[in-house]
Amino acid sequence: MTNDDGGGAEEVERLRLENEELHAEVERVTGVKRHRMRAAAAVVAIVFAVASFAVALPGAWARRTLTNTDTYLSVVGPLASDPAVQEALARQITTAVFEAVDVQSKLTEVLTDKAPQLTFLAGPITQSVQGFVQDQVQKILASDQFQQLWEQANRIVQSQLVAVLRGDSSVLQVQNGQVVLNYLPLVNEALQQVSSTLSSLLGRQITLPTITPDMVPADAVAKIEAALGVTLPATFGTVVVYDSDALSSVQDGVKIAQQTLFILIAILLIGLIVALVVSPHRRRTLLQLAVAIAVVTVIERRLGIASVNDVVNLVPPENQAAARAVAEALIGWFLDYTVRFLWLALIVIVAALLSGPYPWAVWFRGAVDDVVHHTLRGEEVPPEGSPSAWIAEHRTPVIAGIAVVAAVVFWVASLSAGWWLLFAIVFILLELIAWRVARGPAEEEPAAA
Image (cartoon, rainbow, N blue to C red; front, side, top):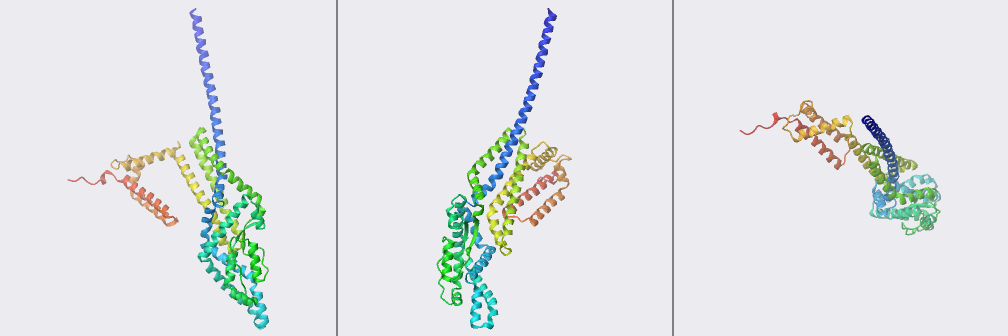
């Protein structure tokens, strides 16, 4: 009876142990599966977050810079005082004026009629007159009148551009399929400056019309043609900002950016949160997110810079400086924010690495703790072999090295006032820390007798 009872108890115990082992194995397998599922979910969240960031960043730039009138004018307004832009406009306006009246041909006709032997002077005289006109145009471009005209013309262009990108085809119908920057008022002003010369060349009194920036270019050109009695090119006095050839693709892109920008930002935030919550290795996930965003930012930044170069290469060499000024002004906000995102990503990467379990990170945290401890409590002697002891033993080269690095940074780097102040504070703190750690008990001032 006893043996049977003992055998039964052993069997029960064996079954209980097997059941516990089986349960433990099930828990292990379930835990592994759960771990893998969480890791996979974190990867998916990272992909969504990074993809939405990649699309949202240029979308935010387009929404802020191109579709907001005040922001657009704040970007392009200062270009009116840019020397490269003024020079390009003066040259283009002067060329437009001479296209309008064909000065050299008219002068050749006059000389042929009155002094045939002086016909060869038509070219040099035309160049002199052209120089005079360009000087007059430069004065106009340096005036407050030009600043007002520039802002008014760009306000009209921006409203037309936004209307077109949002699908309002009436703008394109009026402008023959294009959005143009109308500088005809400036051309007309330049023509008025030389109206007496034109009257002499054409043999009749020239009365130029009043041209305003909001006037349809085709109508303005027709009025100038009637006043001068000449035929002008269809593009006279205008710069094409947008052509309808790329209408559908650009409209689709802007429409998507407008409608989905806030959705993309929401997906970005949700993706970041989900990735960090479900990830079994949050520090690693944070590091992956920061690295991915940094890579995307660098790629988009390089594409932005390349687009500026592409635009500049499309214009004639003499106007490339002006084209670069305009392109860099338009893309400036985008480039500034990519730098900020890169700094943020770098800070996150450094923080994630320094807080990790890596041997070098553990050593670094210990070294910082040792230095901070002996900085705050300078009366203690640093233990032999510690970072503080090493600094104390090499005080002079350490302090000199910090000073040399500071000098090199301030000499080589081009820093703004804010960055200069920040680096100055950092280097001063490093010098104070090195001095404090190296200040042993022997250097304490003797107590008063």
